[in-house]
Image 1 (cartoon, rainbow over the protein chains, first blue to last red):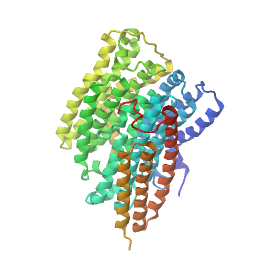
Image 2: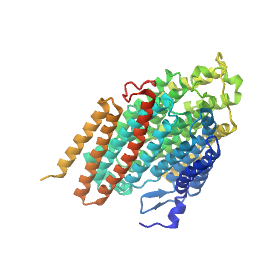
Image 3: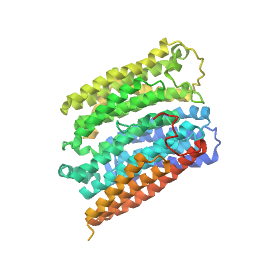
Image 4: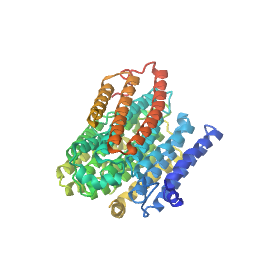
Length: 475
Length: 100
């Protein structure tokens, strides 16, 4: 195997995160539980990796005997993973202190899950996708149950573990069939042989099993049943991490395997993708209306958002792929901001999570209420915020791909979802407050939320130049 | 004479048994064993294809799957112990504060 210094420089974002995992473990040995060193170290190394990944964005290449790629869409996704996880680290510090969580394992696992995500996005080989996926998932199983004395947390962890491992079984069996029918694990070879391979039933079956496995990971209906329980039971920053960058990583794997379809090959799975997208959008939006718990509501809303992004895949157009990446960036920061505010308002005993608990927040904490309103407006897709353009680009791709009805279902689902997002805003400003809830606003958490808010506005104000940047790297 | 089809049929049967096990059994440990059966059915398919293709990559990948399955088992069993300490059961029907 060839291994040069150029490989290491071009893979610097991955190297930084990998080294941080080891350094974080060492720091944990020498610091006390209440110490914030580890949190700051995690946040800063993730932001450093995010900065470096933008630096190499226009230098594409393959490294380590051709199994790992760098540059282009890979580095845009690396930026989302590392920056998003950096924001999570900022949000976590106050939350960890409040809930007396064990921080040593926590930050090490966050870093290790990010490393897994980066491997998925950089993969040029099915084996790398598998290793990255498992590194991310196993870290998430442990993170979900990190408050191991609390019933809800371990229950979420067990459910996530069992269904996640089940999904892994599908992914691996799908890979076996793809390998058997194409004779290779290299994604590029599969990509060029794709137009011939889609006529083989064994290959299409393998592809379908692979997509089903990842449909579990992105929580698309009918493979979504774990998501509400897991997001509700996990510690709030962890739920934020899993529902945003974790989901983005699973979409990155789908983007890799669907690459030939975006180049113009026949979209053999169109009926499957279209049905899953339709069910996810409608089911997620309708069931979210009935939810009182904010985290559970956001879980159902994330099911609906997975549906919108699947439209981009069903369209089979290159604009769809760029739209999905744009949507991933937008969705990651809208949702992270919302989870950040929930983490601040939540008490150590996991109360103050109901929508009604937010009554009167508009007068008592105007800044928090304004920020949460911004994220709710963005999630519901009101222009000119990030969420609107995310939906706009995938819907346009669907129309270009000749699936106008899918775009219409998407518009209908967005209209339904406006109700439950705006309900939160209405309750905050016009609801009667009965309980005098305690909440802890720390400057660090506020910093994380403000960064998310700025990105949500920026993505909404400059969608054209950002989508052009993404498109130029997707081709 | 054993052909590729024999191995693929066996691996498909193992995979189906694993899926049925996950969907019907209620004890978390047995559910996890069914998942392991699914992973091993994929391993069998990988080895069979690799022999047919005369390509070592499929066989090497099986080691990856085994190593990762071991890591998954370590974390999974730790989670089950945490659940058992809190609830004194690992029956997934009785683990239901969060409604399905």
